[in-house]
Image (cartoon, rainbow, N blue to C red; front, side):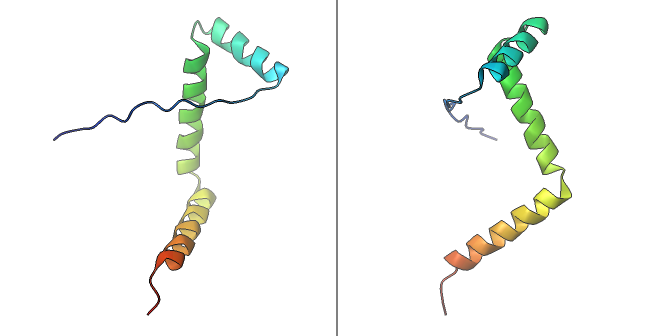
Length: 74
């Protein structure tokens, strides 16, 4: 099986001074780079949403709406 790696995607976020300070403090105490803390938080958020039943219902409804829009008229 061949697995193709996608190139990393750079993103920019703006944080309040308080958020930035909290993030930097957490990273420092955990002896991690800020980017590692951010990636870990994103992974946790995605996992939590994927396990959330209401989110899954909303996702399914969104997919059905998009499919209906893109479905050719007969």
